Image 1: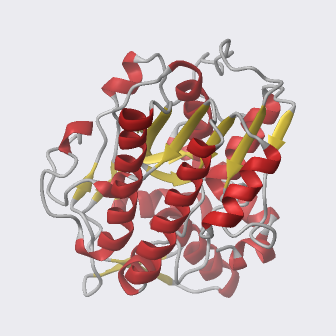
Image 2: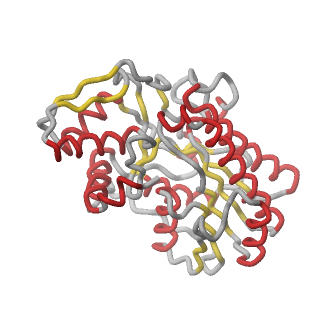
Length: 330
């Protein structure tokens, strides 16, 4: 399925040595899997991965040993414990602990083994709940966080600062990128832990399968969110790894947003046009709006090329093709 709008093709990268080993931490996740696909498409010869059964990224000694044995030169740190508003709000301690440990062990092992370059992936939830819109990189730590995902956000902020301080103190070439809301192949469609877009796809699909007449959507529908296809993110990551070495983090998004109500109607049109939608205002909305300022990334020569509607269709096709697996992802 052709996803890209216009005539923009993926960039061809010149600086990265495709013969050097590249470690993608979190390759079984949506983001890590997309990065592996992109690196493979670009002809990287040694793409290193490690399943949880063989490497606990929360264990510093195990991570150190793995890095010493495999000697990656480039590292994409996409591993972590993630989830939607329900999971974030009810598992704050788990999200904080797991992510703090994973980020710290990989960054430290990368320093000890003198990795050439590391890219750490954060999340747009790092920004204050009432940030000015669109949210620029300098909004970090300028106000209170969204309470429903504070634990996860604090862990991600710590990851950013860890990379910045390692760069300043040790001279490590560790960079950080902050993607907006993501979707695409290998997303988590579990209704207890998924983000809003895969949750909507799952709800509308299940309603269609069961012949239901109404789909209930959490919240008022008024919050606005930005959505980036994970294949676009993967390309942006390679672009930054290739050509950016600044200490400050870089926002990665589309620069446009949509209300949850409009998103729900778009998913309905794609999945189950006949059904009615009702909004459950007793459920939390989260941040009123979350749109990233992507001008810094644009100045670095990259912009998203996958439009939302074809992107959702692509995600839904993957969901249908992998229905049994998708319901249990996460």
